[in-house]
Every structure is written in C-alpha cells, then in structure tokens.
Image 1 (cartoon, helix red, strand yellow):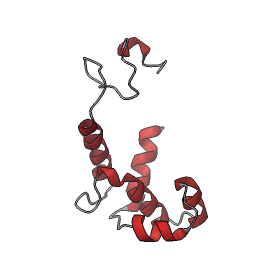
Image 2 (cartoon, one colour; image 1 turned 180 degrees about the vertical axis):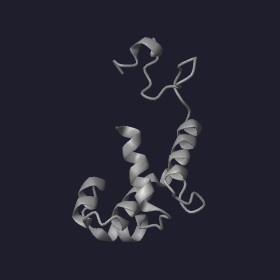
Image 3 (spheres, helix red, strand yellow; image 1 turned 45 degrees about the horizontal axis):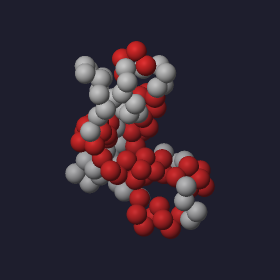
Image 4 (cartoon, one colour; image 1 turned 30 degrees about the vertical axis):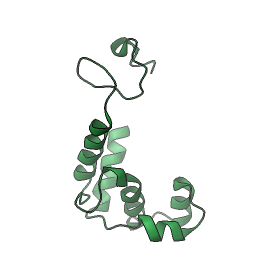
Length: 106
C-alpha cells in the first residue's frame, strides 16, 4: 500500500486499476486477470476457471514432483484425500505454469 500511495490517493482497496483512475478493481477484473495468467501458464481454461487457481497450482506442483507433504502444508490441508478428491486436475504444461507464476512475482 505504501509503494502505491502516490497513485492510489485515498483509495484503500488492496487491488486497484493500473490505469487512471486508480480505483478498486471489480471481481470480474480479478477473474479476467487470473484467467489470463492461467492461459499463459498452459492451463486449459475450459477445465479450470479463474476460481480454480488453487487446483491449478497444486496440480501443477504434483506434476513437477513437489512432495505431497509440502503441497498439503502450503495449501493448509491435513490429508491427501482433499487434494485427490477436489483439486487434482489435469494441467497441460505444468513447467510453464510454475515459470509464469514465479516470473510474475519476482
């Protein structure tokens, strides 16, 4: 919030538009942003929608041989059953997904 103080003015929402006016973004905008990231990451958005980023991230992690205990801890799950039942989805290119996510936050 401090780093964007100059452009945000009195706007206190965490996520704001990058173009003027720098007001808070809508749920639809966030959904569109997430979908764009999923597409760039090689995720089939016909299978996984923007609300499925947790499934996409954990599914990509398992395909990249991230240890299950690390996935469970990061996602806040106590058993593998939750992941297998609700979140284990096909990912087209799991390497691309991880690269896209990491490059966007670095």
